[in-house]
Image (tube, rainbow, N blue to C red):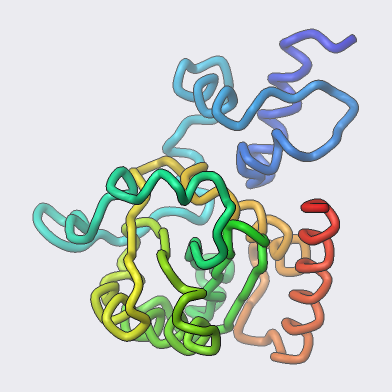
Length: 229
């Protein structure tokens, strides 16, 4: 049996390696891991060395828009229909970005994950501008029937500043997660973690070829499907 301190040390080690609480709680390690919500609570209560601000610095710090420098427009996730949580209906997506290492390149991946099936999409884009992200999301999801894109949940990063264009074009609803609540779009977070296995932080994503990305996405979707079943 492992004591709580050994579990805390393991979690701290993984957090320092940029693992998310969602990944830590679901990855077998020989120890009984708590839920990701408990890990977030331990961070908040200072049982762990990592802080919520540390998690944001590990690739999640965003420029903010709007009043006081904050991105304040758009519907809160708290207004999203509760039925989305049960994962029984296809068409509810989560969106995010996965960036190159600091100073390496502005290139990044626009990522999308469907909540019911865990189907995962990653598109290489040259930068994180709102217009660039909107085009990537629209191009990726417009390939699906209209009824297959009901909602998209993301954070309030500046790359989602053109959310109205996405809503209008795809005729869907966009919702924004609460600050520092990565678990509210945990499907995308976990799959981003799998993508990081192929493209660790520090990798210049501008050099990734479409063929290689397509191959790696196929492997990720196969793993996600296997876990689901």
